[in-house]
Length: 415
Image (cartoon, rainbow, N blue to C red; front, side, top):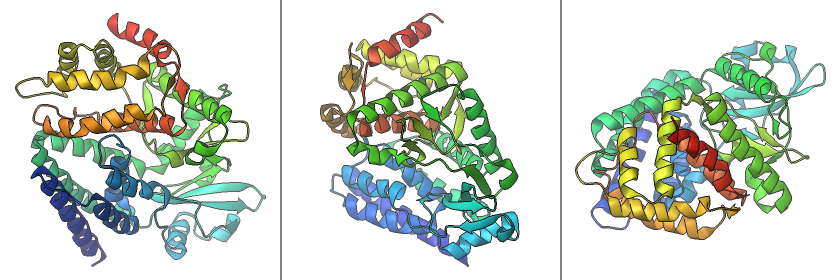
């Protein structure tokens, strides 16, 4: 009965979303704020894959209508926590008698997300730890929810996205969600990253506690800090230090280790008292093959050269363009929007003119969807890079992207 209720609610939300999209496509004005509020209320309670999809959507700040993006962003900050009795069920499933392991567990979580929530606890030895607890029964409803998510994603056909491409995007999303339920894999990722960056003075990565972790609970040593979203109002020096650490880390991940932290929402990051970047969540770490990196840098190279034909060639190689007739005018406008961030010298990521121009391009991007397609197998990569970009915007970063990218562009040209 509970599963059928979830299905009905997901289908209802999908129908409401589809109605808004169809109204817009037919030239009407959708009430994006009302839709966003409905999605927040419904998905915050349901949790799971559909909520995760909405969180992913909210990170595409430059493509969504602002009212919808703002409402969906609340799912990152204010998602309703699951009641303590249900969380206690998950803890008892993992530990049996939880009193044998902990002298105290805070019933109110200090973080809630789509697939689990985080509670602070104290061991009998007096050590403060955090417990990332998977929502009870989530694994059981995952596949059912994914079927409904697939139906919702089929709305993309209204924007002329081929079914085969939608299927490929869905499979990548589904694989990522299934992996996020594997807390053993996340514990191993934490340990791997801690070893990799142990000598990096800019980064702090919590230590996983394997003896207290299992399939449904991930235990880590507590590392306190100021959440990234709260750094927007802190002093400029701290923000810039954290922004540099974030940019350096993303670059090293990609071009040295061929991996990327693929869950970039602001709640996964913080700064400690020394201004170091804390990275909390490693539930989504994806491999990035060298061939994909090279293709991305070739597209950026063509974009910075403001060469529409080279941009089209790069997109074709990535699988991001099909159909007849390259939208060359759209390429030119896109290049004009992006290029200023890569001019020599420090550039201000909080420059609203860049974001305004990107938003103004959105209707033209949707109109060209019969030719521009999301490249298969890049959903998580594109989402992660976009999310990290907006984290730099929140930090009001000032970075010399020209100096940072020149050696990477030279690498892409030489191979």
